[in-house]
Image (cartoon, one colour):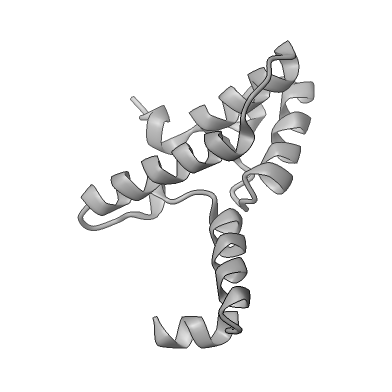
Length: 111
């Protein structure tokens, strides 16, 4: 049986209104490019919008990034299934680089 914790739920299994909201969340809130699957953190964000609950978004994203970091550090071998928030991580790195008067390309070459 497929492990949905790491593989997610395929977008085609969602109702159209959920799939549309998921795409907005992936593009503009979690800033990632894997549009084919929904993960648990997406479901939490979607419930916030659909049920009208309030969510401390910066804190939620911070906890999500910390969880990803811990999971990736524990993994040996293929870490790709555990990486998410690619765009958000890049935005955070670029912000820090800008403060240090550095650029993305130079950062990549050094690392």
